Length: 221
Image (cartoon, rainbow, N blue to C red; front, top):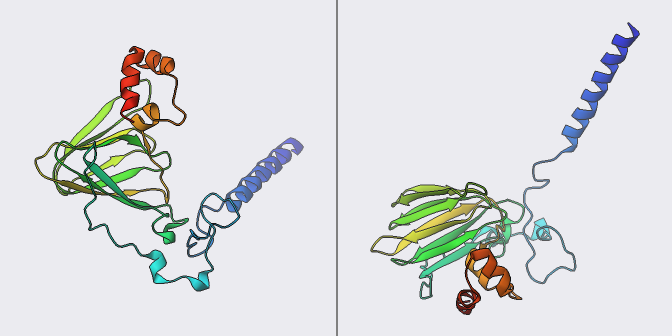
């Protein structure tokens, strides 16, 4: 009887401990919003931005204008990504969302890249895109789809992905991301244009080529 009673007490104690942990976890915002103070930079470093006094918040803190303007695609990759993150729209701070507009000329590409802090859902507004992502090791599966106006495609968080305009007209897409500041790492820039540069011997071994090829690639960045 005593052992049974002790077992009941142990179970109840564990349940109480678990419940206390559950109630201690707060997955939601602690206030309606936290409009970021971008300038001047506060003398405090936090994971995000310091909040403006809620009493001083205005409608413009939640407003951005300009996604109707085509991006300048006169560059080597013939594409332009226009960001709307917390850096452009302070009201996004702590909300866990952001947007981009992607403009790509025919045969242009939004180069293979990844977002370390966000998944992405993309909608094609105009044109035709070949889009996809690569899964992680060891499979490294290439998962792709040809997208037309009105089509939607999802890129999982942290995976290398791309968009390539295979049509004959200018392509436009709007994407939403699950972070106020998703970050972006363009693979070619990171590997061949790092600062300071990665050693030639390291890259030559990794890519199974000689140093002359690595030098040629680095010269592009």
